[in-house]
Length: 406
Ligand SMILES: *Cc1c(COP(=O)(O)O)cnc(C)c1O
Image 1 (cartoon, rainbow, N blue to C red):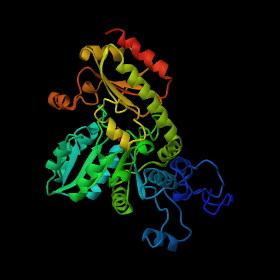
Image 2 (tube, rainbow, N blue to C red):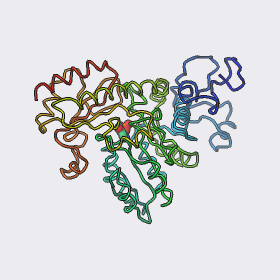
Image 3 (cartoon, rainbow, N blue to C red):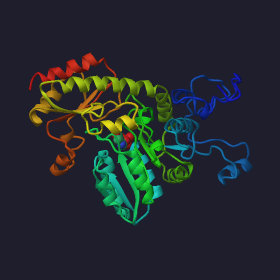
Image 4 (cartoon, rainbow, N blue to C red):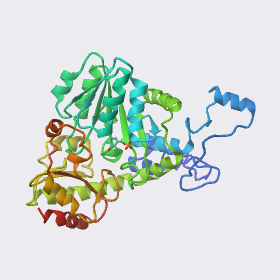
């Protein structure tokens, strides 16, 4: 599938981005076949690279020549993952990181400085808040939080020194949906960068750059892997911004391992069908829970009465795999349901083939104050399910074991 139409095995397998659909690019883009003519992408587990002469080594080190020097700088397998993800997000360039948190850290460290202000949505991943509140503020960067869906609150909280708007949509665990186009416009007007954590949807369901975001951050650990094996992250955007982040990563080192990059690269090939299957299972579970006598409310943007439904229809091609619901009663009843399932995994991770169940108020969101939790709508009777790819009949039956006891 080279541009020339040649079937010569020594041709790169790189396909032209314009000529193919996203599903094809997820499988075919970003890879240069080696001289071994392998069909599946090769993995380059090497920390450094050799040079043919002292002169060539000197030229590589002085950047007179571009080429591999050391895997903290570049690695062919990591590059393949970066190129494929960039194409899928519709961005010019991507850079891979050692984890999702390393992606957000690298964005902040490379693009902000002392005196700048970050405006962030309240319902971001727990460690994102801990990192900003406990560490980033130590370097003189201010942070404040607003409700994801309250556009007036965003506008009012913008300060003259606001340099970054950061959000995660849909939110965890309530599936609230941000208006990406409105936030991008607001950010642009304020001269700030708009950064979106696209972990829950992945580029298979949502491409924030298309709505005006400047950067997308990913925890590849979740759906990009899809089978709960590796930690990783990435940032996608225009080359000017990404090159600045690359500079930080080269110097500071939270880069992705080539082994993990290979796992994620192959994960991208099946991402679309996995996200469709996660979404189909989640939609069926949400509607079943919605009609269940022991369930008082279901939070899933795929349900028509969810406040984010309209925006989700506009921005996303499907609604993803995370469903939260409140049971009648309080913490005791929620814990009873969780403890009496037999198959579902009690773990905070998500984006796995295995369905996971968790009690947000005492785990993922346990560090919030009661007031903050109440404001976010995270009650003691709330349960979050990250729906996997098991048969939906078995997922429902397993939950029924717990629901029967309350
Ligand atoms: C897990 C997660 C992160 C952090 O990713 P790690 O790979 O665990 O560092 C960031 N954002 C969201 C939405 C996540 O779910």
